[in-house]
Image 1: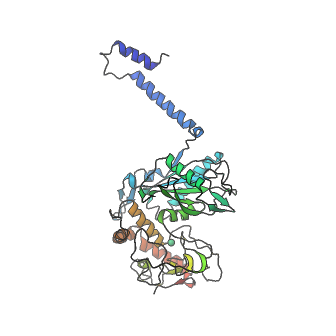
Image 2: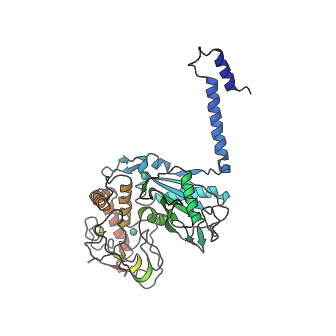
Image 3: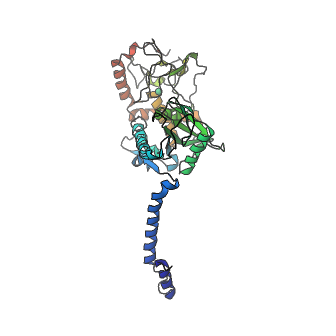
Amino acid sequence: MFTTESHCLADRGKSQEADRDQPCRTGIVSLVTRCWLLLVFCSLISPVLGQAPLISVGEENWQEPWVPDLRHPDRQIAIPLERRVDVLILGDGYLSAEQTQFEQDTQKWYDRFVSLTPFRELRGAFRVRGLWKPSQERAAAEQKSWFHTAVDTGKVVNATSAQTVAAVFAALDEIEINRAALDRRLSHAYVVMLIKDARQRNPSGVSRRLTSPDRQRQVAVAFGADSHHEFGHAYSGLRDEYINQPGKTAQHPPQQPLSLFTVSNLGYTRSAEQLPWSHLSPGSPVNPDRASLIGLLWIGGGPEEGVWHSEARCLMNGTHENWDLQKTRRGVGLRDRQRFCFWCEEIVVARTWHRTGQLGTSDNGETLWQEWIKIRPQYQKMFQVPERIQRQNTANADARLEQARIFERPQ
Ligand SMILES: [Zn+2]
């Protein structure tokens, strides 16, 4: 076949010396055209070939990653790409005709993510993308959906089967992600699994750490409904603040000294001195109002006794066996879907500060926490913590929260 390119080569053969350094314009134009056509063709047939599209959300926030400059509210600190945190959103139980819905749900997840302090302020550090994988069936007990999560009567009942593990790691291997790891754990890549069950809704969720089939890597995955709460577990290591073991007493020593790696939103002491959130308690510089109900001992965190959290409501709270405020009945929802409590917020910021390389190079958790304590006043100022605590105090007073019977005062 006599192509434009071979014609050009033939011409060159005739007068090689004359045009050795002249570009073959016809060939280049042809090549560019062909490459372009190939790209168009590939993008058209990629769904057919199973190369599912990657859906970027909020790209303008994270393309050139950054964290806020705590000293200068109008400035940002650029962070290297290897310090950026990946959030990969997967969909299980979405049927092949529901790609648009998955894309919309991915956008919705992101919109809510950046509506929450501190993720809104830290949005420059999180690259959020969805990976489309169509399922043959809804997620159900039979585990025939793409990621094989087992769902029964509105709950995720098995998120760690060998099939789920294999499918999640296959998805991670399919795309470019930040593969930084601490021990074997991916420290800068997290998965959010949106799930459609037979009700076409997200079942009640869980957070699980999955280990790859070759045992070399672990990834934290937030499954199911209210995946922002589950993401709080997966990304920040935050614990549930609700009671799910009524009457049980926690067997956990008070955390001293504090370490960045183990500091918890739960406290295991009544001692004002040892309480990890004592700097937020009534009478502290950021919370001078002694009538405040922030930073007290609100009962429960798994077990009912011997464990406390710092506010009445938080995104990390829930329902289960919670008392109502008057302690007259159980099963009361205390999740605040709009906000983390101030102590959870600070833990998220401190851990993000570490992951983005802002706490120095130590790998010692206690040293890192000491570094964080030095930075804490800058964070409190930039994030307007005292002003927001004051507003929350007003809201709590309006809700007559002081009449609640599910808190104690540190001693
Ligand atoms: Zn909290």
